[in-house]
Amino acid sequence: MNLLAELTVRRALCIIRAPAIPDPVGLAGTLVEAGLPVVEFALTTPEAPRLIEQASSVDGLILGAGTVMSAQDARDAIAAGASFLLTPGLRPDVAAEAAKRDVPLVLGAMTPTEVAAAVDLGSTAVKVFPAARLGPAYFGDLHGPYPDVPLVATGGITTENAADFLAGGALAVTAGSGVVAPALAAESRLSDIAERARGFVAAVAGAG
Image (cartoon, rainbow, N blue to C red; front, top):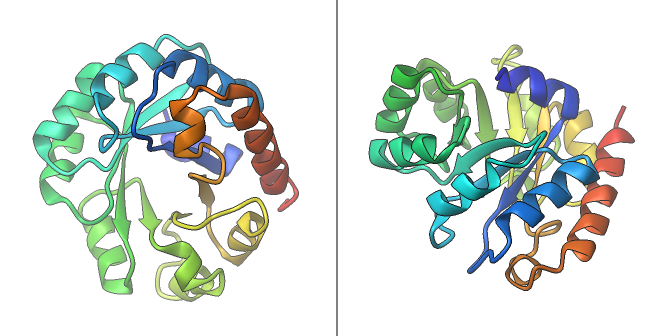
């Protein structure tokens, strides 16, 4: 799986983080049908590896694990079926494990120094967090010294501002609680999630 190619085409991925996910297969299928097939299950969600394993049966799903903090986290997620990994910050042990297993990795960063460190660690793309606090123009600023580094805007991205971050220089944006609100996931309110996901996809498509 070529994660960078998928992000370049789709320009969006979805983060799932909830206190409980009783129907991971239904949730993943809903996102695929709504046009958000690149999905990460955050390891902060209880029983995340089991959820990843169950969701991996969904056709068309490009499945990853997020909030990967250690090499053991990486091994557990990959064993469960994750095809890519994301971290909230610079995690050299996770980067080493991802490289060893030839799994795409998106390391988290905020400052220019951290972006450079992520690239040096072999990050496929760099997740810039917290994007909403930094603003869309920050992505253009980062592309000054790093014109070829793929940047993923994460944190506070909504249907209303997603296009601004893409126009500002982000390769892709992440849909978080604005699409898969924790309560909606915990209550399996899939129709509500589908409606939000379609709105987010439309906003991304409108960015051109």
